[in-house]
Length: 130
Image (cartoon, rainbow, N blue to C red; front, side):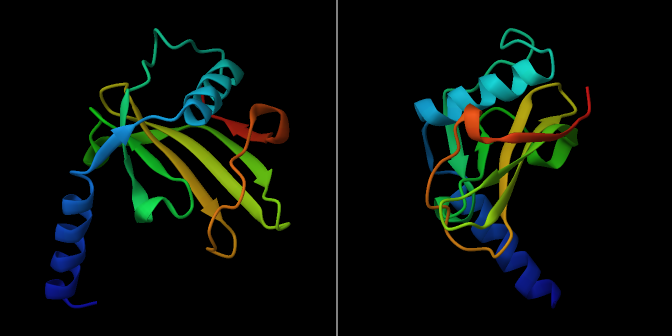
């Protein structure tokens, strides 16, 4: 990839990340559940009220406002979910070097749009890093 194209992609990502929205109840519920599976509480990793959507919200990935994507410091937990179309989705909750929640990252195996948002009762823990 040319450095000019890479620069344009980075600028577009930063421009998109200036558009925030309120966190949705289903996102907050899933994050609280994932924290509890790690033995953590919200007072240890407060959940931002504002989020940025990655890839226009197609797969469900969000960055929690106040965190710094350049300071990624690892995954807290990774779970698996099967969307209603039968396609596997890997969901990872990450933190930054300031011990803030960074991303709730969704990776749908075929890169298609997320159809149904997961709930705590339909995810399976794959690994915890706490």
